[in-house]
Length: 325
Image (cartoon, rainbow, N blue to C red; front, side):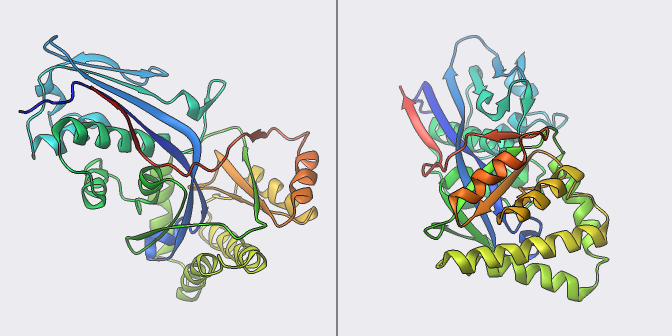
């Protein structure tokens, strides 16, 4: 196998869903924002005879043969991605793979900022560079499905492209928020399992009244269709939040946990809007306003709650091949 690259460094951003979560599973629009916390990946060809996997924090820490990594008995993300590549090209018998996701943690707690999606994008980009397979969207989504994911893929698409992503029925475009839209991001102090929440939602959603299903999907589409005006966008997002809570209450899923509900009440009090981002139940929420002072007022209101204001900004860059040698 040609090996012009023996040392590769890759990074990709995290993400937060702004609108359309769950609805996107049924063909509706979703808006997702890349944020400036990046997972870093280094891949080096070595002469050791094994693959050495390590992570910071240490979610990986093992030395294992390529044959074992490719075994169908393994269900970890690294093995799934390597198996996908092994079916299309040759892989080195020995390498050192390190993934750094420390930016996705607050103190010792993992934040719901899309670290798994960023890890997958990094693995895909580093192995594509190593094997000289051209990177493209179709293959990325195929790799995503190979890791036994059943979501829309909006998270990996956001980490791949960067910026504000609009996804609808597998069509992706990069967008901008209307001028005069301001956002804050909060960690509410505990995590949820995305796959479990998505699976539960799919089961519950099918039993909801068709009229409620259709209203929820229409509300998500309305948000994406209102990006040309800040007041229209804010009003559409308010409606989506209302329908999101209605679906959650009807389905009894507790996506809107007590913490998220408390945040929403306080946001409404100061003229802002709040919603959980992504799977909900825990992790991170986003506060949105058309005036900066409304977000400042919310910060004061929540000062005594067990929430943490996160210093996050939009990252216009997606996956980056930062170094090859």
